[in-house]
Image 1 (cartoon, helix red, strand yellow):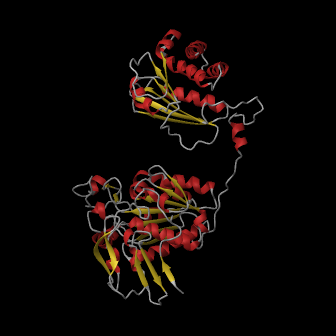
Image 2 (cartoon, rainbow over the protein chains, first blue to last red; image 1 turned 180 degrees about the vertical axis):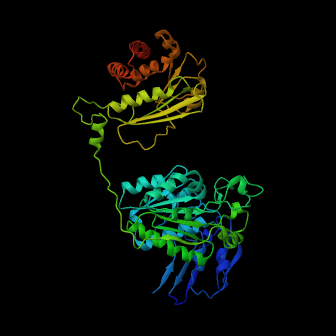
Image 3 (cartoon, rainbow over the protein chains, first blue to last red; image 1 turned 60 degrees about the vertical axis):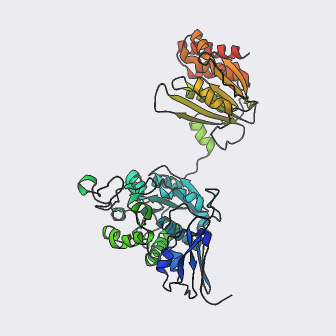
Length: 71
Length: 469
């Protein structure tokens, strides 16, 4: 297992509210044009560099849409 | 040590509300409800109180919380969650009782319930989700709507002279003696979420330790009804909403407050039965009823005023006296006379799962619309009894055994058309074999105290019985 913090977006649970994108201090999350099962253009992890601050997890309204692992 | 932020085990793995969307909530994108739901779930798991937690859900956008939390849940009528939670908390003194309410629910429709529960210092935590608006019904003005804020019912903005001032519930609760914690938090930014987690943890710990009443007002964004995108809605909370509703802890006496436990007396069923003069023993030659099915599902239907609901009630009472499991579910319009009425009665040897009757084994239709509506639902081995005095044509699509009973005419011959329901009672008793003539006579004698009325009804029930033979 990597010793770097990691964020995972479960793309089929994302409702594309975009709040995680705004609050990521490293700007690694982005809106995409991939339409998910719910019919929303899902948010994706576009870059490396997660610091495990969990801002995205805390602000996301959807249980299970975001997982953050901070070693 | 690795810290993993992920879906809390206090949530169900699968949300069974709809065949689709089994992993997601029903909340709109960016709604603060979901964020608050997550905070509560994470803390329930952290504090290890999942098994003792009982949620009381509201009417409003928060209505479906029972689909999300893997804890006990009760749904309350609109505005009554704090009152229902009072009962839940007192009957289960070891529980952590959580009342989850919105601003239309708690601050408008159920204000008195909420204030009095707070004033009694019930052992419960109330989450008051304040999004300044009636969300689920489409954005009407709530007592919490801001001055000048537009809503569907205040299109030119809330006016103080017309609608009064926005209600500050957290301050009101803090002004009472009994509550141990009253606070206002927000879930619009990670910083505010972190602060909310601290306050909510304190409130839940206070519940775990039986410290009394805790009130947490949560400012929540409603992008849909505010007609803003989620980002704008969250910013609007910081810039505007917090001016009217300042964040902070208004009252906190958790530390110094002693644990309080109310006495909860368990009463045995026999003791209640004795007070109500009910016999619970089988000593008096009690015989269970022979049912034509394991569960007989009746539908009685007709015009309002034909005695439909009383007929169902009579069958229910007769069955209850024989210790059967019974449900009685009326359905009728607002008219006292006329209109249509029906009632569903289920009689069973076992506990009854649902009082709703979709496929009756026995249908009594006292008018034509009822026969047309419910007749086709009766299966092949079911009985259909219709009032042939008022119905001249029988629909062709009936599968069950059809009996024509001139109930109104027979009642008229017995002395009063109003006794048509009792004629039907006699007929149904004979056809189903559920009650003997003696049962019916004893029951009628207990029901009708006036001799003339009793005589009329005895005649009517006999007429129905004879017509069935």
